Length: 80
Image (cartoon, rainbow, N blue to C red; front, side):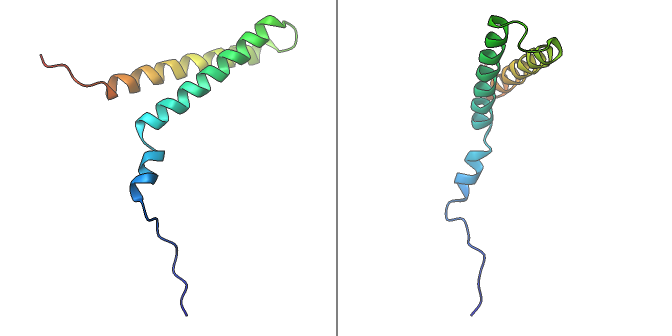
């Protein structure tokens, strides 16, 4: 009796997990999480070091840039 590897019955489901729309949603969630962390750090100065705060802000800005770039790619092209 041979044991075969299970096959994915719905290959498009796996593609959906890596779709640009899915990536955009993940980045939006991460951006919102960073916003909350940065706001908490600003409300309680002294509990977080400045280097870590700067890194969070830099990551948040990079996410914003990535989201804008991806949204521009996903937006339908307007006829000239």
